[in-house]
Length: 143
Image 1: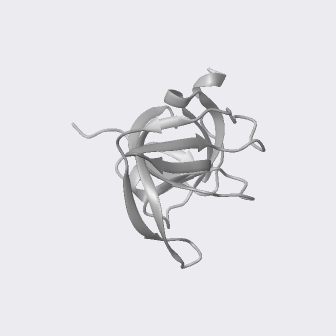
Image 2: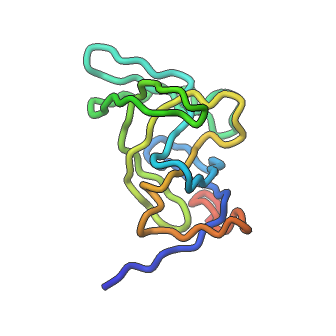
């Protein structure tokens, strides 16, 4: 049986339930392959990755360090064309009425209006993007 694809807009709100982050603005980027999350702290120590999601300028920011034993490093080409090494983790995200576990790269998106960028890898076979629309689905927090 084929799963129903959900229509989402070019901008949505999402929740990262595992980390207590709700109503985070996301930008849907069909030109990006992978998804990314803004982090204000990301450091590897003795095989453990320490991460602080978002920063104090975001309303959903929580000043807490999360620890990850499972992660990987990979070289990626940024939107500016520069190659950089990034950490990747698996995260559950609630968006468009669905909860999806997918891989996110961790990067500093300082000055960006959208702390989360959603790429094709997450969208594929789950969502259809209507670029003329935005904020079609409420976060779990709003329900």
